[in-house]
Amino acid sequence: MKSDELISGVLLVDKGQDMTSHDVVAVARRCLNMKKIGHCGTLDPMATGMLILVLGNGTRLSELLMSEDKEYVGTLTLGKTTNTQDAEGETVLERPVPADLTLDQVKAAFDSLRGDFYQTPPMVSAVKINGVPLYKLARKGQEVEREPRFVRVYDYEITRFAPPEVDFRVVCSKGFYVRTYANDIGEKLGCGGHLSALRRTRSGHFKLLPGKHVTFDMLKQGKRDEVLAAMLSLYDVSKLRGA
Image (cartoon, rainbow, N blue to C red; front, top):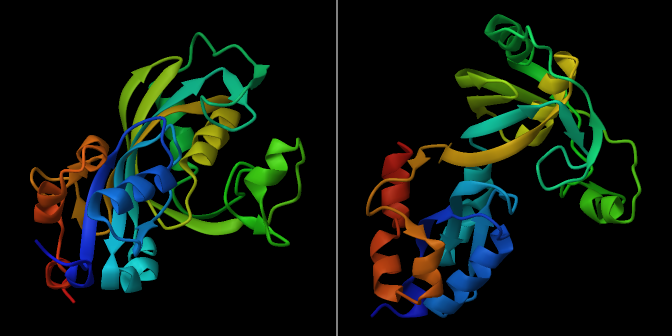
């Protein structure tokens, strides 16, 4: 069995719903009996999919790995705008979805948010204003002005068009909020909308492949040997990234 001092690398976790990224880190620390574990890129409790954990000396790669592009698949539900821009929030406005809404109209809305543009972070985010995370202000019912951030959508695909639901895939830059993307597309269509499902399928060069990732249940059940077998060494990471 490896000693804690020798455990360094990257662990890909397929996060389930209704848990925070911090929950996953806490369970991983117990499973591996080590404290030096961090994550690269928060996933909201509603979201599933790839959460990158960095272990031991792998924590030095945290900023580098967080800076890489991401891929998500999600569902936009039209007609309802929520105060969190996703399904976990309260509905603040309902508008009818046009009965004659076409796929071409939806594509035009998606096309308008392709390439480089500025996006305003949602109030329910970890962005800090005067040292205070926005989500803490949002919990108090406060809304403050946020500075738009430069983001990029490299590519998108509409995979299902079944109003009021639209399934999509998007490849985007660091710092991109998919919930805001869904909200803004709903506004462009005039009926509003919110993000009702989200899964991260790729981060940089990493994908969830059989035998190369673990689940939250594996961590919770303390399957230490199986978890370590799935860990990517720092050499593996360097080779994968072509460094």
